[in-house]
Length: 232
Image 1 (cartoon, rainbow, N blue to C red):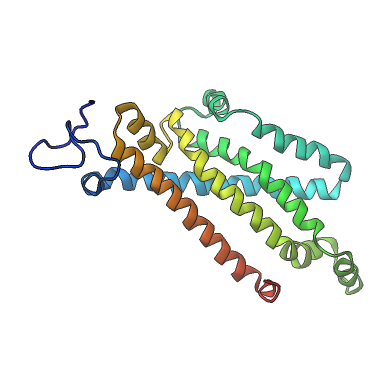
Image 2 (tube, helix red, strand yellow):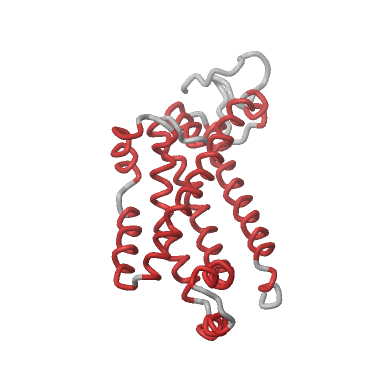
């Protein structure tokens, strides 16, 4: 059995002789390390989602404005996702180094696959009669986009964002390749050292984080789209 580095005096659920999957004592003893990994995981996830949104919005609007470019935009966003994460992150290292930026950029590009399509589907869901009514009221193209189309497209776009968020939380663990994997670093270390408590704790936290973020996005969607309450 691999030496896990815990104290040998007194009973313990993780030691050189005991290696349990669920161990609250491990959480108490390593809470600072766990907290640091969790915070890093959250920051990388949010940064990647913000980057993905910042790129996806102009791409979706470009595809909407110029229909002949739609297939190219969707092809690009989908094509990025076909590159395995184990290959994409090392490909970025020569440009961004072994840094959190490497993980953020890689995950932001992966999120485009879901976000671009969700934004396009959301814009398509806006009824034509609504656009015609807005035009009759004197709305210009920019005002119609910001005041009519984007708000009405928000429910579909938020559904895509929820999927992208959960996917990004899972993919952040791959950042351990460049030493910035958040909870993924604990998972990798737990696998390498056969440290069951560390592996299980990090995995459970990933699941909890995904569920909490999904709940937050659902609440945010209801706050931003109160007119959909009756439909639900």
